[in-house]
Image (cartoon, rainbow, N blue to C red):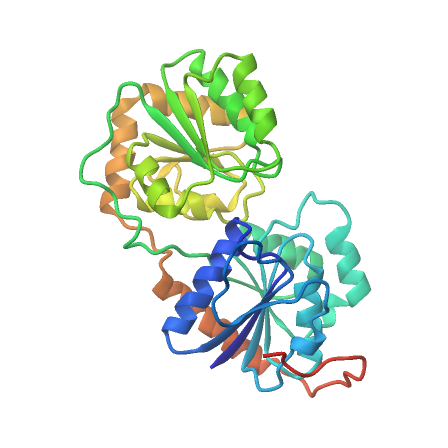
Length: 361
C-alpha cells in the first residue's frame, strides 16, 4: 500500500502529533508499505531519511500522487496545509482520511470558519479523532461520523521496573510542552499548594514558551530546591525519570489524548489527570489513577495520593500488572480499517486544473 501523510508540523518540533506521525510512518514502513510524509516544518539541523518531503510555503497540490492508495491528513487547531491536502485529494478521487489530534473546543472561531470556507461537511473523506472527547467536538462541528482511533505507544519500550520507587518523600513527574494549552503554570501552582501541606519533590520534563514563567514562579515561591526542570529529554531519559516517579500529573483540560500519560501508565506510574481530557479514556478513576474536574480537584487528588501510600501503591501495582491496550498492533489495525472506510467513500475526481495532481518524489 502507498500511503501519503500530510502534517503541518513534524520533527524536529516535538509534540504529540509530531511524535505520533513519526512513529506511525515508521511502523507502516516496517509492515512493508510505501509511506511518505509531507510537511511545512523546516528540517533545521535534522538529517532526514528517505520519504520526507519538506515543502516550505508550497501548497499541497503538486504533492498529490494519483497512484497513492490513501492520503492521511493529520490536523490540529490550525492546519491549513493538511486540510488543503485532504480537500484536494478527496476531490481528486484519492481515498482520504483526516485525523484530528486536538480538541476543537474553546478555541475561538477557527474551526467554524474552516468549516464554512471549505464546506467541510461535504467532503467525501473519512474523519477520525484520537479520543472520544476529541471526536465529540468534531461531530458537533461537522455533523459527520467520526471514528475514534487512539494514539499508541510501544508497550515493550515502556515496561515497569519490578520494584516501586522510594516512598519518602513521594516524587511527582510531569512530561509536557511548557505552554498555556498544556497548562504549565497551573501545574506549578498545584505543586506549590500541595507542597504547603505534604512533603514532595517533583520533576517537570519539557520545554516551551512558558518556561521562563515557570522558572519565575518557582523562584518567587522558593520551590527551586523541590521542583526540577530538565528541559527536553529523549525517550531513554524519560524512562529513567518515570522509574523514580510516585505520581504522574497531566494537568491539561484540553489534552486530546495524552501520549506522555500513556507512557507513564505503561511504566506503572499512578496517573493524576483532568477528567475532561483524553487521558480519561484510558485512566479509570481509582484504578489506573485519579481524575479531577478542575484545578481545585487536581490539588485535592494530588494531596490524596501524596498522603495515602496504600492507595498510591495499590494503583502502582495495578498499572504494573495490567498492561494498557493502546499498543501499536491495535493502532495499525485501526488505521488500516480507516483506509478501507476511506476507499468506500471515494467519489469521481473533480477537475484540479488549478494546480494539482503529481507527486514531487
